[in-house]
Length: 113
Length: 113
Image: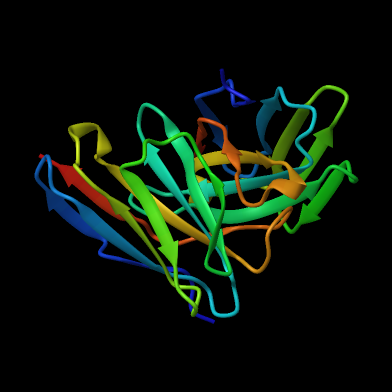
């Protein structure tokens, strides 16, 4: 039973356009969310986080939106660059339960020049 | 500031053997967690240590164990290796427990033959 879902295994976007990666979760108790980018043969790189007390967090080209009622979050990358091509994971945790993050299966983003 | 360092990066073991992987967290970070990544199961939480104490444990058999030292460095051990233990083992560190970003190392690639 997947608690964190990323229903799009892959996504292709033209360079300069917006990339939108989606993530859904089933446990309404999750209250802290992270996005990571991962290149092959490397560890995941932290991108951006959001706490359940917020509905939006921005950092440069990356914006994460959280819709608690829908148990949905999304990562927007604007503008998309070829170097953004990677696998993106969302992760969720319960604030008081340490670093036991539940990861989604990932979405492979390809940014085409 | 140096990132999370994992050793060894690559190793090959035979079924039935045991393996020890090492992780040095980011300086000042006291929480260390371990994750296993496989193509079929994605990123799965193994366990987390804080101040030399195991705080959380995922759903892995007792063959998987870990420890943390007073300098926050951590090791994980897998005994009686099985072919299915072949995976990328990722260590992550954080400055505190609960609702905080975790930063990953490059991982240790374990192949069991």
